[in-house]
Length: 326
Image (cartoon, helix red, strand yellow):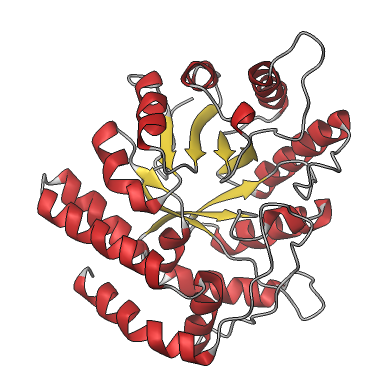
């Protein structure tokens, strides 16, 4: 299967919008999507993403978000839907393996029926090897089973802090890339050597590698990756677009200047989710700040809400930086 055109530049991990009671806010989500559409610099919209609190989602939440995003963005932007089975990432409370796989297949088929342009699955760190199996065997068999039942573009997501024994090796990456409807993978890592070896393993293959840390986008560009997913691809996609355009015209000074700005945005942002929702509201796209707890996820913690002082301190830097690269 050919790599879709949207695997390029900024793929936005869309922030989920919630009601005060924790339910998904459909009106607020559509409003926030309208705000994101304004820049014109986002190549695809990834809902039920990591930054969208994917581990708090139920089956119905996922279907609801797929319906809302696909209907609202039809004809306006590509939609990717996170379709892994239901699990809160608590390693002390693993899902039933058969149910987890069946849920993933059901959600993938549902999202594609709604018009999704691709479906995203995390590396199955919640599935344990059977006797005689390795974790690499688990990963390969899981995606073989998914791809046999999900008739559309499949993308793989290796989240931050994935246990080492579940990280995809270059050999596993190459075998996954040879599966017909696996069209790409996002790997969230700051290890440059590891990323180099993964990209080397898929060099020359029909496969879209996605950098999962925007602070390394410049390195990904040199190695053949064209797309990126990170907080900055939602908050400041203009900078990612500028970097890609600069690279394409062989303007390395422009690439590095934009990378410096991207890194500064990450370093200085008080809370990307709270900031952008507040900023959207200020710009006429009212987006509630209500949140969900993810305390059961051992890799995440509930952050204190952004203060007004933090917002007012970051906003001028944000606007000045965006203006420089727009």
